[in-house]
Length: 202
Image (cartoon, rainbow, N blue to C red; front, side):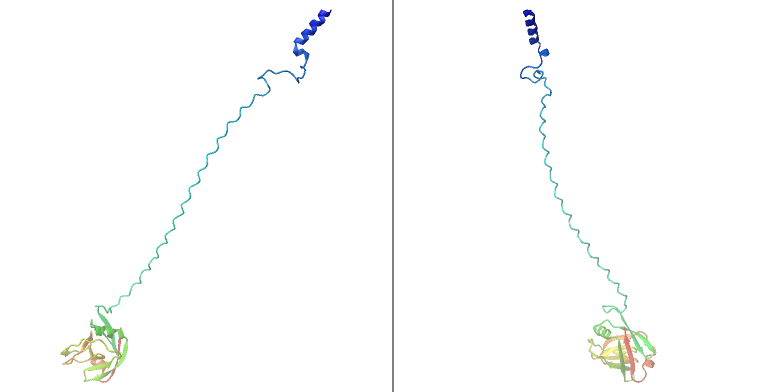
């Protein structure tokens, strides 16, 4: 009888699964390497982001060159047949109701006379062949002896007396030529026998 009890007690001690937990333990013994969770492999260290290359500074736009101001077109000069620089100068000579056209000489005296226009003057009778009047200022002179004075001649006596001849005749006097009427027809009748008011205009 004692032998049977011992056998049974020894069998129970040899079978841990049937004997319950071991003293000081808290449960079933686990073999090494068979635990509940395998140890986690640590994450690989993250490679730090490469530093961003700063944007290149923008080159400021070059200042725009302002458009050059357009030069306004020069106004066209009206054609003038009276050009004092080597061109023909024409003037109007009005006596009463008659109008004549005179062509001035290309000289300093004629240009100076032209610059005085318009002139309205009373011309005095002299010698039955001319009308004369003193000008408000002296003109340049370039005297010559015409020999024959012709109807329609416009001459300068001295430096300030303008003379309009209405007859043709010979003369030994010296004058500076200013010009002459293009067509002196009926000039004697227009000026009459006494003083005459004459207008010289451009």
